[in-house]
Amino acid sequence: MAEEVLMTREALEKQKEELEYLKTFKRQEIAERIERARAFGDLSENSEYDEAKEAQGRLEYDIAQLEEKLRKARVIHEDDHVEGQIGIGSLVAVEEIEDGEVVDDFTLTICGDGEEDPNNNVISYQSPIGSGLMGHSVGETVQIEVPMGELVLRIVNVTRGE
Image 1 (spheres, rainbow, N blue to C red):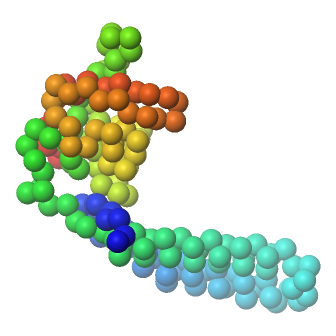
Image 2 (image 1 turned 180 degrees about the vertical axis):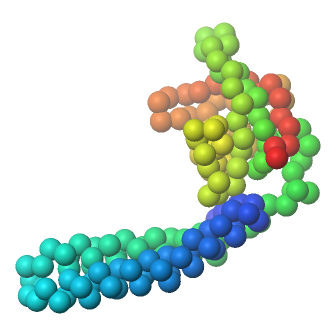
Image 3 (image 1 turned 90 degrees about the vertical axis):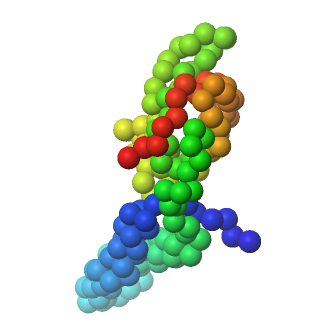
């Protein structure tokens, strides 16, 4: 069975709009590029045509990926949240622990798919840190494998985000 992709209603609507944009405006734009390139003549040595066809292939791939994500989408509702437990929409205060000492503290918001904003500490539940925190509660210490090694985080506070 296909894995669900969790997202808020807003993210679902935004991604549906993106899909519609890609299928209409972007497809038309690339089709026009291909037609212009064909007008240059011999397609065997036509770099504009080759580039437009490559762009068309990338676009169709992006459309297929987005359609698959939307097929797997499940909207998260407010009543899906368990009080005190980290889930989508949680605002999580953590302390980073190294050798038993606190070396940093920060707050993260766990979001659904398509809502990530790492520059503002908004991370997907599917990211290494997000998935490592999901389901845990205040007072727990979790070890999370990240690309740069192991991250040890102590959960200080969990509230419902906005």
